Length: 567
Image (cartoon, rainbow, N blue to C red; front, side, top):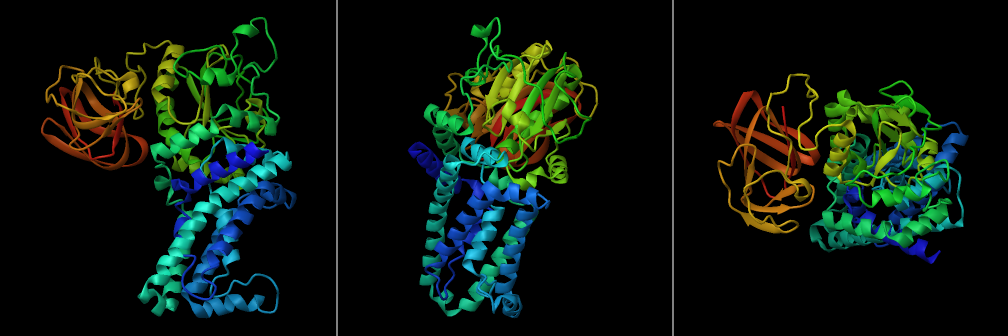
């Protein structure tokens, strides 16, 4: 039990320091505006958030199902609370009207000063943390009515872990505002500003405006989270809580004749760069609906290579993987690849089919999606992560397992192996726009250290910033780095004065880019500017007649370049 408390606290602390809190952070920072009770107000607001988040995470889904209410009702109630409290602060007369129904009751009043506990309750209903094994365990066990003392302790510890940094931020915001003379002298105006912040926050949450910022989790924070939640001891505690046998074989049917050779899913995940024998794939079961396809079974897909991806649409980690999944779907479907998303909801509002359909369309997901609202397929695979994928060969055997983000180059190489395509050769499928590919075009070229393509730079320093000398005219099908770059396994991150020259033959040149800034691309004297924002996304740098030429790139600091593809 002590381990569960510590894990919950640490995971909650990490969540509160991540971009996942950005949508509610403005309200937290302004929650202690000067006025009566302002010193204790942050405690009341954060207390309401903790109570709301913990109670409705554990019981919300079951309560809504029992009352036959829409599963996204609580989220919209939270948005409405923020908007109503904000409007009451913006217009005092409206605040008095809102307060009137509660004046003779003992219920928390939505008064013009903005009841702190009610405000906290609203924040708890709209707070969507980043997914991880701890939150996955809480969500799945609560959704499947496996609520016991261990789960309650883990949930409360997680909520308190989230609350600590938020309380520090709220108190600091109040202290700063209290020391500014202009703020003290114009308290009513300050409250109106706070109301405007709340209304704006409600709109941001309603329209998912903050998602691109939420995806930008710092590398160091993601690393800390991975080390904590992927620790063997932590995994064992979470497995015990869920009644999961962490050492079970990948095979769903128990021991087989070659059981000694079959690896568990966790053993397979330890090395996602090679094809392994992870046992027969487990059949899809207990699904509640389908999007983008008629109902499918893995038996129906025998003879196909299947990439089974567990995800949920509000999970920022999942969203960062989607550009890769959609690209593989587009590129390899004609060769026999089926990308199949299993949508296992993290929150009650993600159980609503219309919500999943709308967000899948917004995120560009066109491959089949199985709705796993009851977590039966999730549990069949002993799942504990969003996202996670299982690569299944044509005979129905699982050959690769990967939890979380990353391993994109390794996964694509294994997909090509199972499809019978040369790893080093480009795909032979048509591109997404259906136009013909250029004969003899340059092969797909990776910029990360794990699969770095042909280049002219000697002694590339993987994992650390280094200065490189640009060759402005590199040999055919070769690239050259100039300026400062930090080459990571999956990508190269631009530093000061970062440049790149690529000699290619193609009619179209695409590059997966991530980060923020404007990338300048020049081919044959024609310059194009590409705006990069957020998660890794495929950008077109050249689209014209087939040509043999040199592409010159200038990249701002912090932009990450993953891989070139050609059409």
